[in-house]
Amino acid sequence: MSKPAIKEASEVILEVGRILLASGSTTNRVETMMLKVANCFGYPKTHAFVTPTGIFLTVSDGKNEHRTNIYRIESRQMNLGKITAISRLITEMEKAHCDVTNSKMSVTKLKAELYRVDHTQNWPTWLQIFAGGATSGFFCLLYGGSWLEFAVAYAVGVLVSLSVYLLGKLRLTLYLANTVGAMLIVLFTKLFQVWVPGYLNTDKIIIGGIMLLVPGLAMVNAIRDTMSGDLVSGMARGVEAIFIAVAIATGTGVMFKIWTLLGGI
Image 1 (cartoon, rainbow, N blue to C red):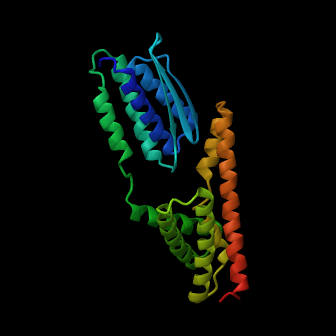
Image 2: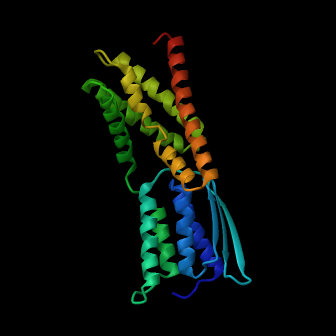
């Protein structure tokens, strides 16, 4: 593979970082993968600085030519499938670059692969929604719920997952989306308590539903970023996780209060 122009190389490197960061990857992994691609392109004098919401990239040929790019990440969602696919793609690229017996990956092919990964939906929406129901239901069982409460928690999880999916199209802020999601969990649970005959332990159902919103991976990434020395990203992700937890608690408390004021219908 001939050495690509610095403009083309920087655009591809930036695209790798964008997909990884928008898919929820840790900043350390994003920087590492970007530098690997730059090295394969023949630009070892590359510097990348990544935060949870932005990428700063400077590609240099080591002489007189430099190119700096800044890209802001507007929205992020956890997609481990894309992170794995990009990591595997770059590993294959490194092997082809180091092994002279193999034909090296062209820039055009790499662009095509990046586009395919970026536009591939790992799982259909309907399956993700029903998986959300299963998550809520089985967490309800884990906390001691009955099979009747499992069924209600499953239904609540499906309804909340569908609601969160539709709310995502409105581009609400992360805090507001989680607040509304928590309110819906309490609302649906209380409505099922009125409609479903028999005793329901709503606490376990609500806890199962809340587990859909808990930012577990965000907390893990915050710890990983901090331990790898990325203090800015680690602190930012940690604060984000705390705000999400506050939003969940706020939404739950507000809906409980509204339900009480309405007299439980």
